[in-house]
Image (cartoon, rainbow, N blue to C red; front, top):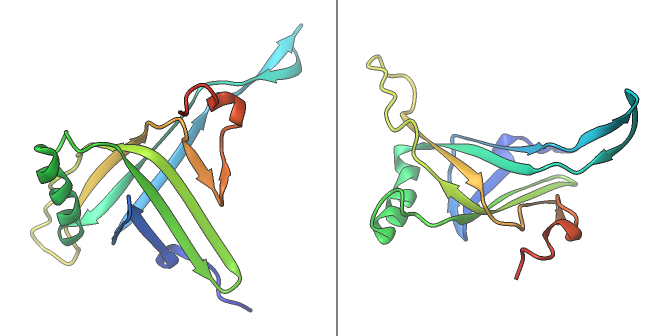
Amino acid sequence: MSKRISGASFDVYIDSTLINVEKVTLDITDNTAATLTGGVPDGYVDGDVSAAGEFELSIQAFQILKGLAKQAGSWRGIPPVDLLFYAKAGGEESKVEAFGCKMNLSSILDIDPKGGALSVRKIPFQVTDPRFINIDGIPYLEAEATENLIG
């Protein structure tokens, strides 16, 4: 048996800066729908798409975002960033890119006075760039969907 990819295998980059995450999610919503004629499926239509996720960062890792906020002049002023999630283990490799991710602060305090767990901050984000998401180098969206949006 060879080594397999786990959550611990991933390196996460905000733009080109490596960041240690406690947890991160990224979900795509694709509203493509079946078409019906007389109640019977007879094809499909492309629907709108969106993608969003959330970082959970330790206070130490949160300092990277603090630097971005200081540079922007406010937390909300942090410009959209590109994200890269990369892992390689044994013969397996995974690379997910999300473009133009606009971050927002959400859960900035979650204090448990008995301790025993790392204090984290939650940062939700939304994908805002028409390049959207690449999975293992392959765009999620077909070129026709974005040809008039990408300059």
